[in-house]
Length: 114
Length: 116
Image (cartoon, rainbow over all chains, first blue to last red; front, side, top):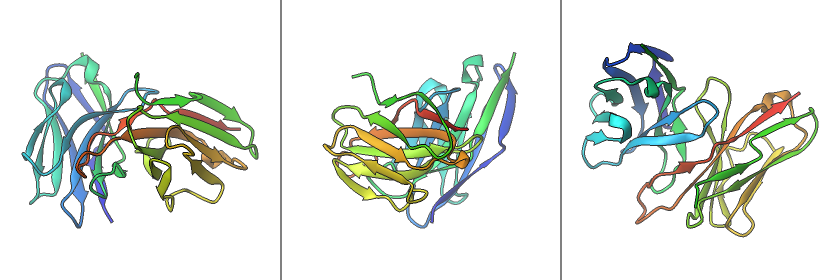
């Protein structure tokens, strides 16, 4: 069975600082990996996805993530944090190709300090 | 089209009552998914449909949970004899896979259920 572990339930950074949110996955097949963002009382919005093309994936709002098979990781980064980045971030792996049957991590709450 | 629509946004019900939630997917999307999200956790997959066919329902939490998509358009999720542990956000998502590839799923804003 596939699983996702997000290291750090809370991350706090200063505005303008580097954002690094960690995600490790477990999968017996080549994974499809995703990062979603959730604002309070809202649904989830896709930031970026890895589908076995380029290992460095660029997403919306300046975020990017790098797939590292040897480390089974898919960490999310952004060079310079904005106040508007404060939200909950979820890493997810898809169990089967062609369907969004996703297994999510527990989430990381990102706080931006002014 | 304004995206995936879920109704109601909030539902408060007494324990033991039945509740039904509705999801209207993006119009051309043939796949529809239901997830449950409890406080402080990531969403948990429940079930999904391709058109009107329910392709997996083994993850539905108990036989009190059921979902339908009778005409391959909107879907309903029903919880019978609600319990306090059913309190959660119920999320719906839809997608349109192309060539078997994992295209993006679009999520609705969810229905927050509170069982008192």
